[in-house]
Picture 1 (cartoon, one colour):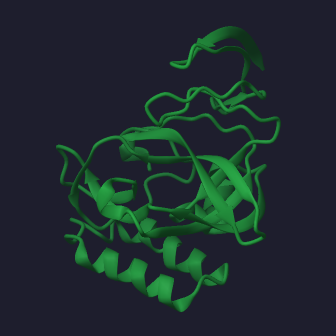
Picture 2 (cartoon, helix red, strand yellow; picture 1 turned 135 degrees about the vertical axis):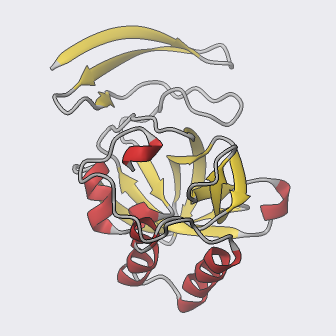
Length: 213
């Protein structure tokens, strides 16, 4: 295990010291650091306990454990003024992905999901960025979380079957309402079909490139 120390400067003129540890699987985990918010993205997370908001495939327990094996589920939660959508990455037409839309056309909507204590995952993936949000837990508490969204969503498009199936499986197993499940299903069906929707999952161990996920 290798470690290094470096400074991160935020737009709000704050800085923090971050200790990064790179493990044998090539993934990076951060020890707690100061949270720096600028244009909606996060550079680091500020609390001793970090929370992740899962709203798509990672709602399904077997799938999130592939990426964050040390995570612990905390509570169901809603994210006001955001909507789950399915898009291809801009400039591509090979497949769709989950996207969290927080633009004005999603105001008044609620994206539902799960809050997890995360295990310090800091991996970045092709066509996605990490950013900070505050969600409302069904326990009446608010949780400052991070999650992923597409950097530049393109045309509405369905994801491959292996990817999509985690979503209804997770929503059902976690007891989300039939109304919300039907809404997600309708959003999926309204998007353009995925070319080669029956393609196999490309990797048992997910990589950072789009082709490996």
